[in-house]
Image (tube, rainbow, N blue to C red):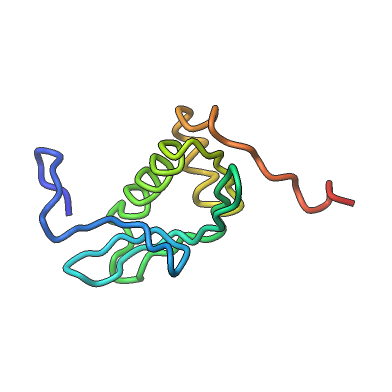
Length: 110
């Protein structure tokens, strides 16, 4: 995945799959990690992030999260992290906080 100089091998690709409503990271052309989203006016809600079991522990979800969040910010939209992984990632990377609207806990909606 990442060489010692911080560069990626040519076998890793990142993309936004609008038809499937997800961001994808492929390794050797196989889907390794995905982040499902709902694209709504003015914001993007992240609902689920998943890494294929054989690809876990390589930091792929973090790479995909940064790619997806940067894409949302570049589009001028707000990030709404319903996905616990994306929420945790934003907590560790405060540069995204100013672009984030935290969802209300389910019990607060009553």
